[in-house]
Length: 98
Image: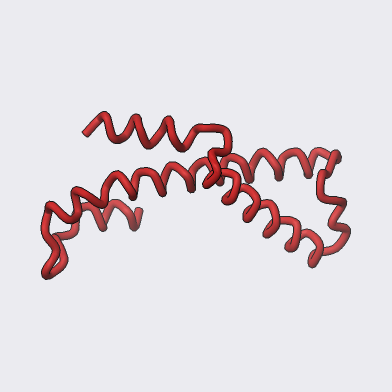
């Protein structure tokens, strides 16, 4: 909900509507990449928790935390490199709606 309040907030001092308008495509791309990273992370987590763990069992709490972090980072890197292609589809869809 914090993001919605930022959309409704008045422009910061010294910011122009044109500058904010030009930042929107980059923001849409970034948001789409983050969404794709979350989706990829959930896919990896689901596979690991199904018992077919691809990064090992992570038998203790420390191991689980390390595997969770590794999956999050891998998902983020995959999404930034194209991933499943969802980020590109989402951001282009958002840009054409403007």
